[in-house]
Length: 246
Image (cartoon, rainbow, N blue to C red):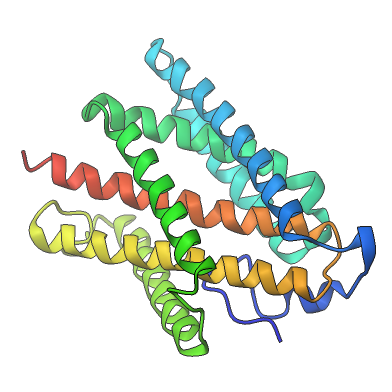
């Protein structure tokens, strides 16, 4: 049976519901990597476009909100209807790029060079964990999966509570602060976000081994992108906290 992934887009029954296929109609790791590369190119392209608009003096807040809302709706559809992934994942990547470009530009305006640092750190973490996974330095055991899943769910709950309380003008202590406790919390969240990549690697590898249909390559790429976007956002928030102390 496919193992649990902390990524909410990749759950225990995702590949089992899709069925089992053979030959050219089945999912492969190489195909998933190719689809992930395509989605990343789309995301970076739209992010750069929004970034350029911001630094050319245009107000991109509407684009950021629109990208976030449309991206969320598309993510929900893809998560529950995996066979829509080949059609919706590229659009999702476009919308997510618009959102990330706007957010990144605002961070860059405050802290010069922060986005490049965050992007490089995200890439290094991804490559490092991929190597660690492929060489079995890190193994996605059941206890490992349960621990990461529980931590991810806990973080999601804290963010939800923070969002709801923020609507009433109440701030969760330390979560968004730049003191050492706040920085420590961000480091912990970055670690958990990074460990979700290990679960995603394992999940996709098992899905390919069990003969999931070809369209699940797009779904697997979608799951990886969700984790990478989360990791990037947490890293840039951590760097902003550290830089604001200087």
